[in-house]
Image 1 (spheres, rainbow, N blue to C red):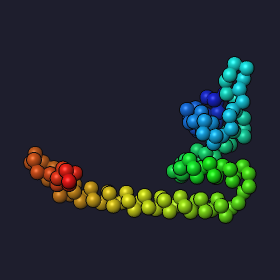
Image 2: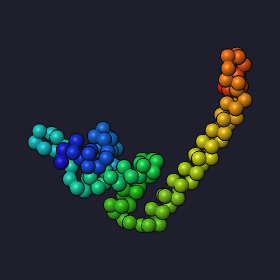
Image 3: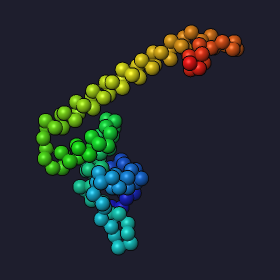
Image 4: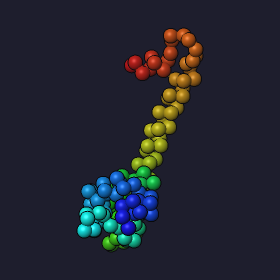
Length: 127
């Protein structure tokens, strides 16, 4: 199938497919005589795999490792370790985002929100 059909089948945009190819996350697509990329079932499965890993917010470095493990040596220990590292990163981000949300909410709660020039949000940002 061509890149548009492969994009539809995998849920990955054509632009991202070209990017994944450029960073060697997927092998270079075979080409027609006219130079158009051609994708098969194997490439579609790989693209779906990558898309799902991206849905989990995984960085490209981890996705590369997972694709390698999925396509080659399937060590569940290594896969689990990668997943747990990502869980730890997500947990840290959640803590950080929660702290930011709470701080901003506190500032918003102390702001009158009227036509007064006094605003604790602006005062805090000014610091």
